Amino acid sequence: MTAAQLSIMFFLQLAAIIAACRLVGLAAQRWLNQPQVVGEMIAGVLLGPSVLGLLAPQIEAALFPEESKKVLYVGAQLGVGLYMFIVGLTFDKDEFRSSARSAAAVAFGSMAAPFAVAALMVPWLMGIDGLFTPRVGEAQAALFLGAAIAITAFPMLARIIHERGIAHTKLGTLSLSSGAIGDAGAWIVVALVLASLGEGASLAWRAVGGGLAFAVVMVWIAPPLLARLGAIHARQGEIGGGLLGTVLVLFLLSAFFMDAAGIHAVFGGFLLGTAMPRGPFAEELRAKLEPFTTVFLLPMFFTFSGLNTQLQVVDNLALAGAALAILAASILAKGGACYLAARLSGHDHATAMGIGALMNARGLMELIIINIGLQRGIIEPGLFAILVVMAIVTTLMASPLFEAVYGRRAREEGRM
Image (cartoon, rainbow, N blue to C red):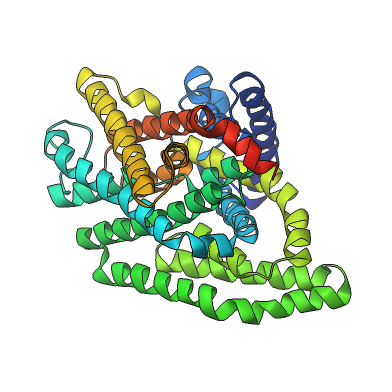
């Protein structure tokens, strides 16, 4: 396929992606009481081989030829990274400092329990065909499965929190903080697994060292330097092209650094957003970037992941049993651990339940991890499909469960 053909196809793909995401998102809001983001996740799966490819394979193949997926991948990473930068702009650092111990405790619990459950399940799962590849040992399998169970749908968590109007509440800040800490840990574990499979010890050192160094810079060094951007905005009275271009260059460099370190671009965008000056500058910057990012760029992220999802490979009783066991263990381990950690940190029952409900969503961060596992020869298509099902179910249940355990209180806090 030539560059001109890719360009033509890209416009058609984006038209289909945006239309599907808006329509399914609207249906999810109106009929399922789900946030827009969940509808967009479903739309991505509908456009892929699991639904469109099954019902109309020729249309799916013509609309999303293999050569075009590389272009969609780049757009997907840009969309999710820029969205997490916007989330970082609204992140309440003062509230985070006041709840840092609780966030660390919840993050630790959200990782410890899933890894323990994975270690118990892996000896049984290794005996089922279609889950792990022969090159993977039990320790490596347990670490990878633990990371897959422990991961939180960080971008989706952020959108659910913002759509519910609780971004500046203690629960919203604690959930985002815990999700960020836990997901960074999960990515580091994945890097360790890849290193143990011959990717090289340098990968693990780069992930740990690079991630910590970047976090230190963004927390302690960057804020006073970036405060100059707020001063320029105060003098000019608006964010002009030069100021906006400077911010976007900083975002792209941050995303590059975290991706090159082996963690993920989303953390570069998020940490840069938290370091930006607050007040009118952050508010105008968000107003300029958010509509285009959420409506145009972010749907590419959901669709690209959906194009790599094939649910029909779970076609026998052994795999179905493994799917049910992994789903049940994932929900109980992650949700229960987050609830218990929040309670032990001094939060009341309703807040702890709300945190457990939100943190249990895995979404497409899960799909990113398992795509890496599939591509690097850690898992086979059967386990990939099972973990996709787990990601979809836990994400779908997050919003209704949160509404049931914390909805009324969230609305009251959002009006404060």
